[in-house]
Length: 212
Image (tube, rainbow, N blue to C red; front, side, top):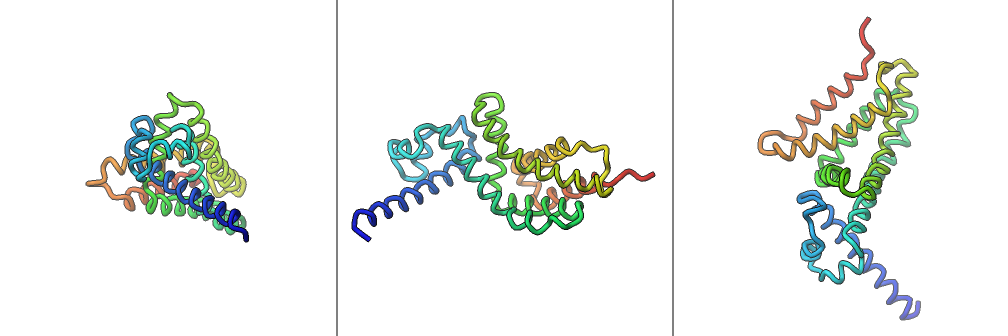
């Protein structure tokens, strides 16, 4: 390998590491303070970088936010690759429970990810359609996975049929994001595991067909 290709490869690796560091800082700050209140200067300071260097990687704060959304989406998908591949032959109830357990576990260890989505969704819904559409695009992927499981359960008579699959899936996704934000507010008196267990119980039992 010649010197020039080697140097280029080192620069690319360094740039990739720097990009990850920027995204980590952005996710944390956006989750804590929101998108609107966080400045590029604050982000640059958090990663010990000059604002000029930060703008070289991301020309605008919106570009950085969209990249952070993509990054979190990729991380979340990786958590579900094996689950989606393994559960196709399982009963619908087991599929739903596994999906919920994986979601709860992911958010337990990556709290800022869920809070990030809640904060950014609340701000962008009225102020930034480009960001709002990016969030809708990503969240709709999970919504449609859940809706597919619900339809399967209804077809197999495991689930009640008076629930509209897409709307029910939206309610489930919104419940987890909202719960994490709410629990963070009451973190001195409300702990994550018991409150998410209560939500899981309500959601799972809500699929039960009505007794005749």
